[in-house]
Image (cartoon, rainbow, N blue to C red):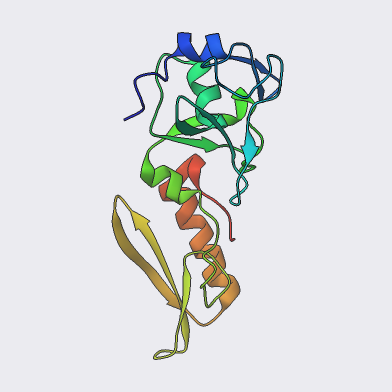
Length: 167
């Protein structure tokens, strides 16, 4: 659940939104080391922009979404997958599952393709996708290109607009 102070009114009091960025409109406290009109936020090591106020650190995309809506969802997705594109049109509320559907290829992937594992036992590529919280198997294939086709089709069938491509 989002913090109680993250209300539309309070955030619009603190910040001004302009072209996917927020700027300080008012100081959250008299001791805050900020300037009115200054762009708010810094980029972290995961390439997300954050802003600190009221002894809390919050993602800029969450603040922007809440500034335009009457609630603050737990998860927000960047439709174009660019974590620094915080245009309001690019932000959408999602569930944890939907957010995971849109994730990148895992760094420890052995096949280098999302939802495809290579089985040394059968010497085939196995397609597995999470559907409604359950990991489902969609077959084993000798041809990696056909396995990629099946994985992509199943992602789009079961994950819809939240599906991410191969990697």
